[in-house]
Length: 121
Image 1 (tube, rainbow, N blue to C red):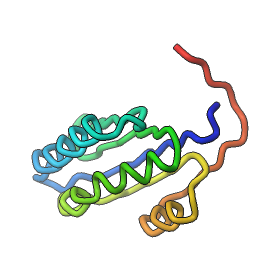
Image 2: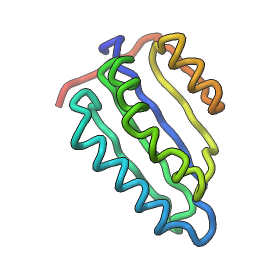
Image 3: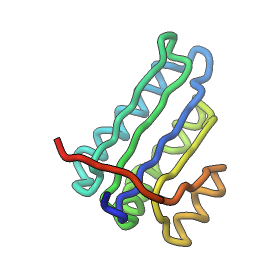
Image 4: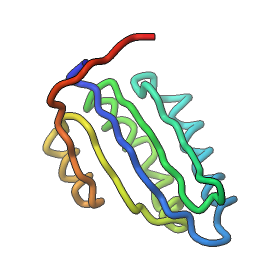
């Protein structure tokens, strides 16, 4: 396991009648990440069956990559939160003090790596 890698798992409750707006903002964020962030290793969005919840699973090479991501998508966050609410936010990996402060303000829990097995495909 690369101890510098940071993963973020977020759960959003999509406001009633706002799925299309939520998805449109999400697509803007995905396009931004895909075009500008080579150190974002994965950035995936999942919806439940009735589209009332969205889960994002994100993986960043290191804290610098996560900082870059936050700067890049900052312009979209208020639009996303106009049509949804963060219901759970977990961060896995060692954050810088600045990143920890930002995520704690959003109600995130930060989990630090202990031990495990990682295999390459």
